[in-house]
Image (cartoon, rainbow, N blue to C red; front, side, top):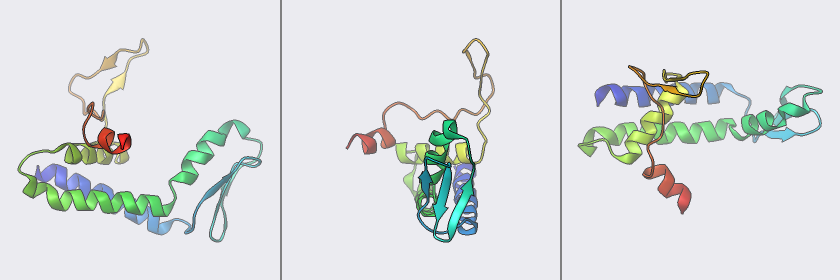
Length: 137
């Protein structure tokens, strides 16, 4: 599990580094000009892209404070994982999130919709388990 622990630490480090380098403040998306406003003004802005509004909302919801909290959770899981004795649902989900964040997922979907999973790294969350339990509460 040492490789997975290193993956969690590296994803947390990169997430924290990017968050610390980003504009501080709560980001807000503005529907009229698709912008994200931070503590010191516009974080980014694009005009005439109303069809991109869902993207702006999503990006604005991933402000530096959110990324820092997820990085802290990944660091915490990495610290506890060696003592767990096995891969718990929480550890499994953290590894999946770290792989997604680090762009290490290599499974593809063919044009006909079939999944190509031969020898690839999957980033699917297993059914049930930690995240589903948390969301369901």
